[in-house]
Image (tube, rainbow over all chains, first blue to last red; front, side):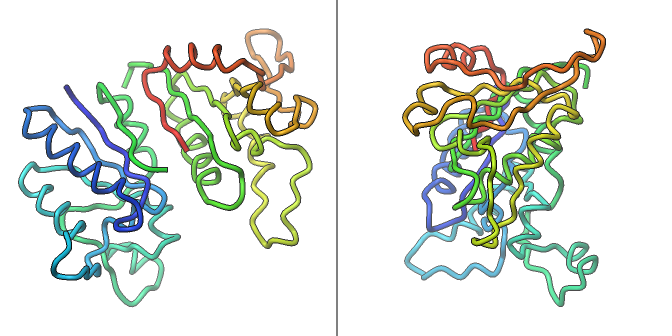
Length: 130
Length: 135
């Protein structure tokens, strides 16, 4: 089955990002396809490489990046939600006159149309958090 | 993308207090460009999103309620509001914004966008959907 996943909460405060990660990991290992993971609301905070959790805890951001490499996953941060919350790639930083970017490897920033397209292209959209 | 799917946006949060309602509405307005079969549902505190006379001046929150009036122009004209959720909050249809749309297949007749449905009817509507996004 072809899934897309929407992640609506940030890391650590809500477990939604963890549950989404484990769902996607399990789906991929079972041979399913994941067309796209779309991060919205505070979910965009899953995509900042500045995250520095304690060493004895899971690193949610690095875990996403590793999964993206392993499975060529499309991890998309909503641009409007990301701008509100200070998540930037190099292009967005330049466009908005900011002095740095913070997007984590494996993520990209794009528009809400990517979420709608994921709904059209996928057999199921599974929403975590919100 | 020629395929048309049934999208339902389910709104469960009050308009202020959290950003879910505002950012949810942004998805609906962007999604309208994709020419899918779109509807919205309002349940729980989500029914407050459609309340008339919202005034956010004292809280310094952005009053985005006028944006709901634009939904008809975006051909988002099926807004299902759960009757039980209204009643539980002491509201009825007259407390909601009189949202309308113009039906080009019916000589641009102005029609109501809001449909009050029972919890059981809404359950059936959810069952019909291809994609459900909840905010």
